[in-house]
Structure formats: structure tokens, C-alpha cells
Amino acid sequence: MTGKEEAEYIADKQVIRYNELRRKVVGITPTMLTKCLVELEENGLIHRTQYNTIPPKVEYTLTEQGKTLLPALNALYAWAEQRMQDTHSPFNKDGI
Image 1: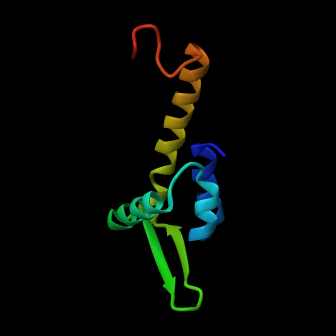
Image 2: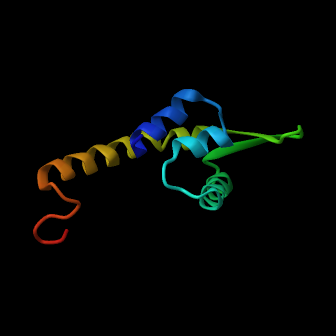
């Protein structure tokens, strides 16, 4: 799953649990995922709901502020995909 697909999945899903998110985000350690989620929550981009059950259940949703970033993220992904197609590498011949 690409970063764009992950963002769209989370946005479409409305509510996503931690373990589901961990499975969808390839190549990230649980520690780094938790750190990123804490930062996103502190910045008001996601909302975290914790249920005091055994085992613990935690759900994440995008806030309205977080949803406003989706068009910018989609534009960034489209730019990166086009750049990769144009240059066949992350950098052009000038290293830019």
C-alpha cells in the first residue's frame, strides 16, 4: 500500500484501530508509529479514543482539521508520482 492509499484508506474508513493501522503502514516500527500518532494528536490532526477493556482497544479518527490536509497530501503524492515517472528516480540529473 502506498502512502497515498494509506491516507485514503484512513480517511474512507472513518475509524481505524491501532493494530489495523500498524498492519497497513508498511516498514514502521510500533514505537515510531506510536510517536507519530502522539504528534498527530498533539497537533489536532487526529482524535484518539481509548476504551478500558481487556485487551485495550484504541481507535483513531481524523479531525476536521486533519481532513483539510487530504487535498494537499493528494497533490503532494501526485507530484511525487509524476516526478518518479519523469525521471525514473527520486532525483533528476541535477540532484533536485
